[in-house]
Amino acid sequence: MRSATGLGRLYVTTLCALAIIAVVGGVFDNLAVVGAALVLSIIAVGFATMTVVHRLEARSAQEAEHGRKVASAAEGVERVEAATAGLAASLERVREDVARLDAIRDHVDESSTRNTFSLREHIDRSLERSTEEAKAHVDTAVAGVESGLKGGLAELHEALVQQGEMVRWLQRNLASLTRHTRRIPGDVQAVLQLVTQHPPAAPLPDVGGWAMEPPTLVRLVDTVLRHRPRLVVECGSGTSTLWIARALHEGGGGRLVAFEHEVEYLEKTKALLLEHGLLAYVDLRHAPLVDTATPRGDFSWYDIAADDVEEIDLLLVDGPPGATGPHARYPALPVLGDKLAPGATVIVDDVSRRDEQEMVEYWLEERPRLRRAGQLGFNAEALVLD
Ligand SMILES: C[S@@+](CC[C@H](N)C(=O)[O-])C[C@H]1O[C@@H](n2cnc3c(N)ncnc32)[C@H](O)[C@@H]1O
Image 1 (tube, rainbow, N blue to C red):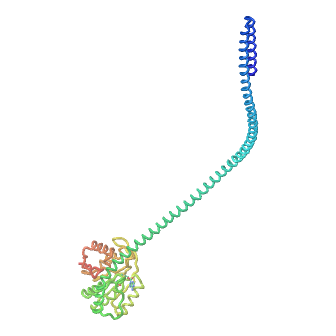
Image 2: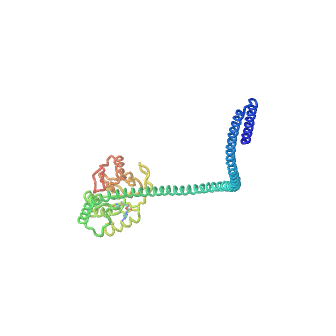
Image 3: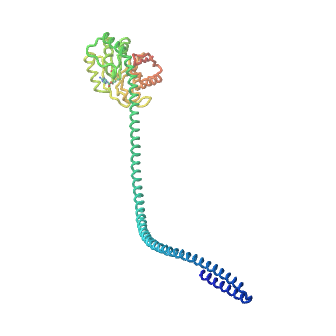
C-alpha cells in the first residue's frame, strides 16, 4: 500500500516536472531551459525511480519477512493449537483426575469420618475399660496393700504385745528365780538343820512351792520347842502340820487343830502324819470354805466349829490359798482373834505377797494389843499378842 502511494507520488512528481518544463519552454521558448528542465526532470524521475525501486525492494524484503513471520506465526498458531488441544486433553484428564480424587476424597472423608468416629468410640471405650480395669487393679492392689499392712501391723502389734507379755513374764520369773537362787543355801542349811536335829521317821513331804519353806519350818519348830504351846491352830494343812506335830512330840505334848478345806489334801496330810507316827498330836478337821462375815465384809473362809478351840497359844495362818480371793486369809483374826491366849504368837506365811502384807496391817489396826515380833525365814512374819 505504501509502495503504491510512493509510486503514485513518483508519477505525480514526474508529470509536474514535465508540465513545468513544458510551461517554462513554451513561455520562454527557450530550448536550453527546456532541456535543463528536462534533464532535471529525468534526474528527478531517476531519483524517484530509484527511490521507488529501493522502496519496493525494501517493501518486498519486508513482505518476505512478513510472510516468514506469518508462516512462522501460523506454525506457532498450529503448535499453540496443538498445545492447546493437548492442554485441553490434559485439562480434561486433570478434571477427570480431580473428579476421581474428589470421589476418592469424599469416600476417604466419609470413611475416615466413619472410621475416625468409630476409632474414637473404640478408643473411648478402650480407654474407659482400661481406666476401669486399671482402677480396679489399683483398688485391689491398694486394698491388698492396706489389708496387708493392717494385717501385718495387727500381727506385728499382737506379736509385740505377746513379746512384751513374755518379756514381763520372763522379768518376773527371772526376779523370782534370782530370789529363789539366792535362797538355796539358806534352804539347804535349814533342811540339814531339820533332818539332823529332828531325824525323820519316814520320807519327808515337799518344802517350798505350795508348802512352807525350810527356813520358816526351822523357825516354826524352834518356836514350838521354846514356847511349848498347849494349843496350836493351823489354817491350811500340809508339810507344816508334820513339823509342828514333830515339835509337839519332842516338846512333850500339846495339841494341833488343823483346818483343811480340801478333803484330798486332808487325807494326804493324815497319811503323812500316820507314816511318821504323829497323828495323835493332830486334830485334822475338814472345813470347807464358806461365806464368812468380817468387819471388812464377807470372805470365803473355813467353816469351822471352833467351840472347843480356846486359848490358842500359837496360830499359824497359811491358808486358804491366795487364789480363792483377795485377802483370802484376813478372817483368821476376826474369827479366832478372841480365842488367842495372852502372849499368843501368830505366824503368817507368804508375807512377801501384797495381800498378806495388807492383811497384817488390817489386823494391827484392829487389834491394838497385837504387835510385830520379827521375820521368820524369808517369807513369814511373827506377831505377838501382849
Ligand atoms: C499354802 S498351802 C500350805 C499348807 C501347809 N501350811 C504347808 O506348809 O504345807 C495351803 C494349801 O495347800 C494344799 N495342800 C496341802 N497338801 C498339799 C499337797 N501335798 N500338794 C498340793 N497342795 C497341798 C491344802 O489345800 C492347803 O490348805
